[in-house]
Length: 353
Image (cartoon, rainbow, N blue to C red; front, side, top):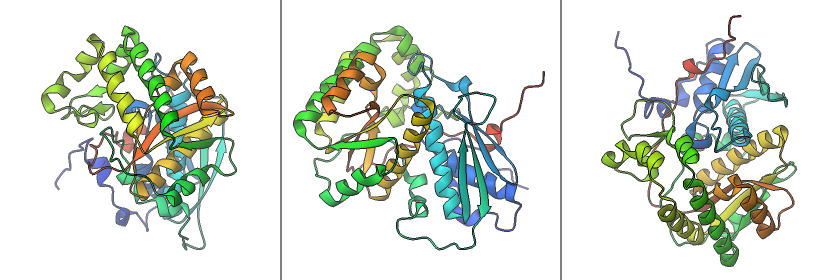
């Protein structure tokens, strides 16, 4: 029998819905759902999640061994990554005919699941146009695009749809297409970039998750996803850790921010429940953007610097704390994929005393 070699850059993205084990056990079906969940976005592709599966559903744990202590000292982005994974599970469950009811644990305890998704087959598999299942095809197509976007306006009808995504939740989003506001936001992005990259500890934290283009490591961000060729990507981690490129990157990212057709900020209060909910809203937004043919990339730098976060909140006139800042637009460039870990490596096991 031919053995298929797992390639972290291709194998995870080749999952096919037609291979769903219809006649398998519930545990086998739930494990198949996790093949889509692991394609969720996470901060610097750290993939800070673990799972356990039973006949009743899936438990999702935070993997704090994969935290970024300098960039994300409060685990804010780690918990939003978990929230994004929870939402992906909701979408995949809907697609394959499972009712998904999530119970949360807001303690942040690493030995207990942050969420337990109870899964049960539905009587009806009918999906409306606005159902979560309509987002399912976007799971495999969603990638961060760090290239310049086209100077093309986003249709107002689509902007209205995006603005309506936060209805009814504690986390919410705001869309800005105001050139003056976005220019001021770009100034904060540039200031944060210079401050962060001047800090050797920050650069070291970031460099831990930068990979060469032909990596076989199943996590982190490849040089290709950052716009590097193969030669440059081989030195990407060393360059990031050793050289302060803040002035160059600040100028480049400010331009990308200013030229973006729209900026979107996700806001909520600072607590475990709000961060998890913000992560779910983020994935709802990203899958919706992908389904509608839009691209995105992150500009979280001023959110990660406390003083600039205060200024960003005041500039945008929002009522809660900014948690995620992204730019949105159209692109003719297909972004590079990032690696993923196999589901089998993500199963939660308790340490033996």
